[in-house]
Image 1 (cartoon, rainbow over the protein chains, first blue to last red):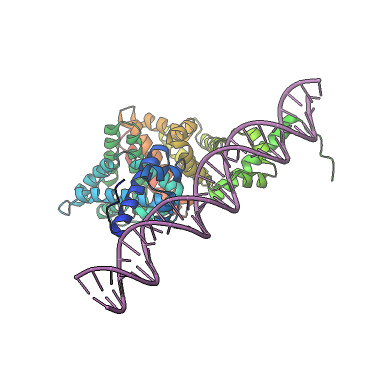
Image 2: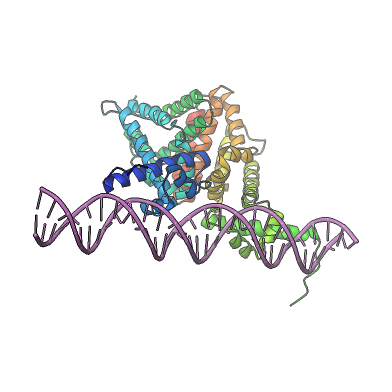
Length: 195
Length: 195
DNA sequence: TGGCTGCATACATGCAGCCTGTATGTTACC
DNA sequence: GGTAACATACAGGCTGCATGTATGCAGCCA
């Protein structure tokens, strides 16, 4: 048994938090949030429940940390796929495909579309998502359709369709068909404006 | 203290089950399934936990009974709004509005669109839904668009949009806007066929 | 500059309360 | 007398907290 290397507190905290978030993500994906116990999480992360409750207020806070990481990666993927050089329509298409691709990361649909809303409710999830996919979609749609009273509602409905497509694909649905159907939907909705 | 009126076993079972389903529905809607304990349920239903576990295998079975009742009422509302006399397009529109109206029953969106999928997963929920809204939509769409490979995917995406609309309306969204946006979506998707 | 002292941070462990599901006991129907 | 419909008691597990311990860290003084 070696005497542990001397590490700064910041370093210790970071690795512990990281271990907890990664371990819980894997378990939440595998068994679902509700079916995952904190003893399981800490066993997988090779720490104790004391460490968990030191770094996170409760079990929900752990899920929140996992979700925030997922949203951040999602947002990064979409931003990267939609450089400012693209015009509104191009950006909408590219962003759409990037969203579906990013949501194909294993477990992401369950975390962001199933367990997240179940635990925090759709309202809070939309707030977390704000800066991410749904926001981009609404902006893109507004750029093409103007800002009539129907546009926010349409954006919300299309966002739900996106989520369903991602979920269907991740559960074995026909990815090609869903991607095509999603693009067709957008095409139809934005037809007749801006060329 | 009166000696209780003599009742048949069937009658006893029916009233007890009914009391449990009604009480749990109210609590599941108010606090969510996970946050509702069986002691609370039986207290509200004025029975004991013994009665609950006599009639239902576990807590999930109680939720399932609640959901089945909701689906049945939903299906009845849609069927009633779409008599065979209507043509495909008329039926699609009428069924759509009936769906949104039926989902406006307080608590129904939370039960069918949030807690249900969280507990049973989308797959099992679709099975429960089988005969109900999603199926009608796919048939209606197929009647208008034929049966290309994209039609099932499109139906699924539109179904998700319907759910989002219902959810948004039930959480204070602009009902008029969402209804209009939903109809616009259907209009766009089915435009150019069948007149 | 280096070591010592006091404090804060990062954990570990034990406990209280609640909840679920089951097993066993009792009452009402048949 | 037997069975279905309940009622009650119990076992196991889980969450969150409270208390205990060790490790890093900051200031002080020499």
